[in-house]
Length: 150
Image (cartoon, rainbow, N blue to C red; front, top):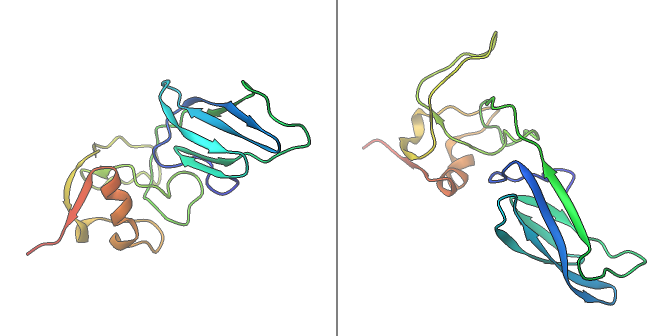
């Protein structure tokens, strides 16, 4: 997927996509994550979207059992920035909540990040024109829960 090939919960490493069933002009592939866990199956022509996002197109030659694609996800820099739904660099997905304001405009800074918890949504800051509503569902999916005061 040219726009979002790496999804929010992807981990660095090699994903294996292996043909487990053949068919004329088709087939089924099993996707295994870098830690060896099965993420799901994908039929030729369909779209897979679990940690990584892609489609397998049918070519002139049919797939055979064991045909394999390796998809490598490189480790990130470990640097973070404000979540912005219009970004295409991974920062369009929320990761955590900073414990306090950190200004890293002139140099890298170290900050404390909460990876789970309950927070007052109106106190959070987002990138671009995003609001708390933009990210409520994605934050919930990573165990960050929002509440309002009162």
